[in-house]
Image (cartoon, rainbow, N blue to C red):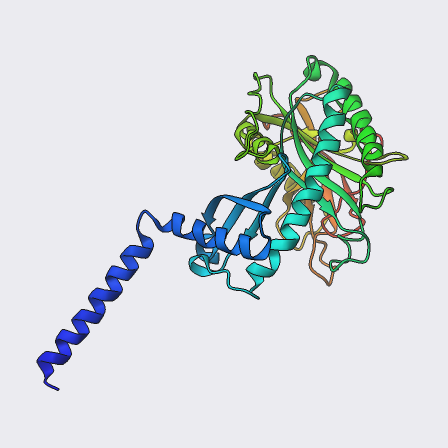
Length: 356
């Protein structure tokens, strides 16, 4: 075969590859992936799912598939495909579809129970970004599955007077609603009736909340509430967590009621902590850094008790084991380092019951 023929063959192969790549990466790519997802869903769970959208996972490869569950207007299921939307029989993607349908139906039942309680107890729910049922104890993830129950991130509107009373009225509502939610879900199928409910609550600032849009055949209520929470995220001002079981509050909303962001006071708190350690002669093996946990001081949403964590030189394992408690305004003014505390476990803070 002559050199000219070889060159022509090589050019033809390159052109064919370029055409194929252009076809795959062209504007119809997502529709092709949706079609592959529809085929896989129908094969693995006949008649159960209606594929709504696919989203590329970037460097991770593959696509995230969002689907409505037929027959349940509240349920939304998700599963992941392989590269280029591949989901052949027996693959990880294919094996995940059936459990995704079961999980979506179970979590839709949880959603109906939770929103039914919240709508009737005085919490003005704007959206729910995450709702996840934790399996019964003995699951594959010790320390996570051992805490059988429900985890949800709920966005609520603020109540008048929060700035004046430091959130006292709002937190009382959240505690009461959370206990009611834990008791209401005790009758759902397939759960530990004594399992805790962990509500991670995001509170909007004093803005007019945009109500969630209407649900429909292609917009399950779980998806509508998730999108509403994501749209409201830039307006969140406060955050807290409340954790009850059906017997009562295990962790009250007052424990960590604090600002949603730390951009205004991070540098001030860390600077005050470094100065305090230097002044008191307390050694640190690393640069002190602001811990994620912080809470408002009593009766205020303008001043925060922040915790700046560090590792003592004698600690032989990773993880910060000491913190400096710093009081600071949310705008970073007037930082005052109060004391150095030992953390009971790495990355966990000591509880200061005198704060609230």
